[in-house]
Length: 337
Ligand code: AMP
Ligand code: MG
Image (cartoon, rainbow, N blue to C red):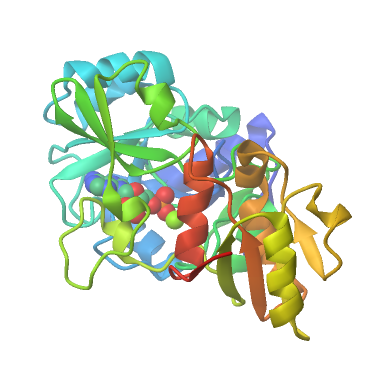
């Protein structure tokens, strides 16, 4: 199969929607990262997504809808708090885990009786959902374990020959996947994966917002997790990633001691003025760092980096999402200097 690159013209979006209606898989831009989209209600199409990514069958797919009101068609119960959150954050980078009904097959939900529902704000993704008339299951469009794609070219590199098409909608705005939450009670939610909708933002609507411990700490083998994605090594380039917490001064000393031929550093914008070793930079605040992180991890592989020391942002606000992706990319290898 040759993977076709489509533009974001209405004619090409119609082609993408037709492919999805007919059971094919299409790479689609969203405001978070690029997704691999297929009809969430078509079991064979969904099996194709797992096969194209090499994704473990128990890692559930998020289902994307054009409007949150359509969630009643695919779930058995929607708490009052979910409607309130939808009013504020849909469309946008928030996924709500809700009890599913039988219109969502078990393959889509990774065998769980819940389903993650999201309403994307990206006009291309939104239009493709509308034109196809399907609920669209769409995990990140990377090979399982590798950094998520934030451009159509990233998707093409990972998926050429495995999917029907990829729609080029430019670079993803946020650069990290959606915030995933579950409901813990009438007024309480739990963050299962941090994203651009932060704890502080959720607290404007919810009485309590708990951060699941698995976001910052390694899950023990065999332990029960609230979100299957927490069990797997993720977001990781070929290079060995080491996360470093501390000032740029201490970071520079560390690299002075441990630098070698294929060692690179990934530092903040501005650090380069005092940092004399080989490096890339990834922005100056956590929104920029989220936007650039996956792209830079892919670039480091292209440069032939074997070992990369990365300056970690503090895990607050949107920094929590960046910190969470980095600590997983590093396989929980953290140095504090
Ligand atoms: P991705 O498809 O790559 O964006 O990953 C989606 C992640 O969302 C999964 O790895 C899960 O951790 C989480 N997720 C999706 N659906 C559910 C669900 N029903 N319950 C808990 N977590 C979910
Ligand atoms: Mg993913």
